Length: 87
View 1 (cartoon, rainbow, N blue to C red):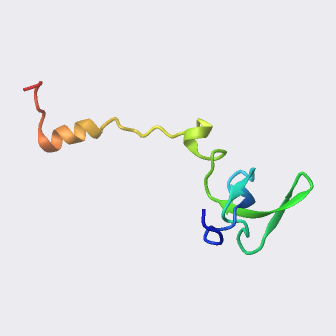
View 2 (cartoon, helix red, strand yellow):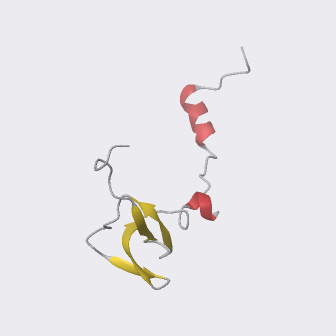
View 3 (cartoon, helix red, strand yellow):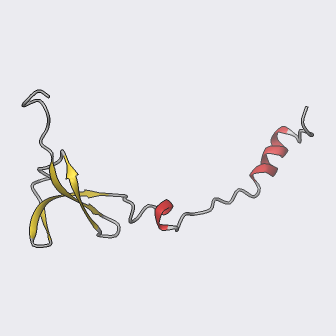
């Protein structure tokens, strides 16, 4: 592997803006954003704020919204007519 061509890779904390949960991981964003830092278990790490994470995404939290699909089929049939059976 060539030396000096890869970005730095180190510990970074991603903070979910919606829930405030912190996730310590490794990333090439080792400087964080705007030089902000957060302390986790007595150690200071650069922090990157994210809008959605596994802690706030509806798919992972089980709070997904069910779209009201009733009426869509009827609207389609009104617009294009009912097609009967397989051909």
